[in-house]
Length: 293
Image (tube, rainbow, N blue to C red; front, side):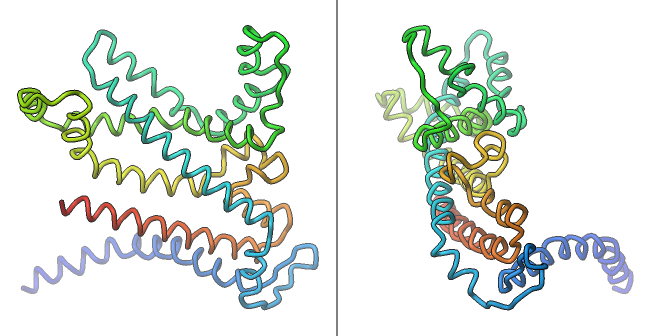
């Protein structure tokens, strides 16, 4: 018994430093962010903290720029995830069929995902340029007099950001779905075929139920990833035109480093944290219900 206890203490002694370091690097930033959110810390006024309580939060919900950021973050996340689900599923089903060159195609479709997001954003900024961009060049081959500044107009700039985000990460999403598809036993499809089930009925009755848990797990990860997205907007539009493509994480950066107001930026970070917690809770509840079926 004593030997077992000594081994237990030795194990705790080995892993405790890692646990303490991990706890510090996780809890300290959260605690200091919560603390700073209660103060007005303005770098232009000398950086002296002034306690304002919940003043930063009340200011946040009346800030039109922040409301625009929240609305676009929700729009960006919704349409991005919807595109990932629909197009990622279609791509995964195509890759799941056996045909000549299948392995080559699976490798090629991963190229956009392997590209750093900042590189993709810079390339997209040039691709959507009116005079020199690839997009308008292709359109002018059919309509020679076509001119349009995609990243200067609010609607098209938002659509362009969402499309580039989907182009970048749908291949990775599809590969994860493909992995789930390959775990479905072939005997189930054979039984469905014998019962007279067509392709559409088989998809909704056999394929989708068997990969539903995987889809929800991916959605949790990708939704949280999209809510905290920063690099694409930073490289592609810098939040413009105006503030129309400013995501929450980018707004936090602007307030903290451009406006030198870390107190207000901390309050926005807390709002972002709460938003992520709500979304994660909804997804985990849905995942638990699917898992119990």
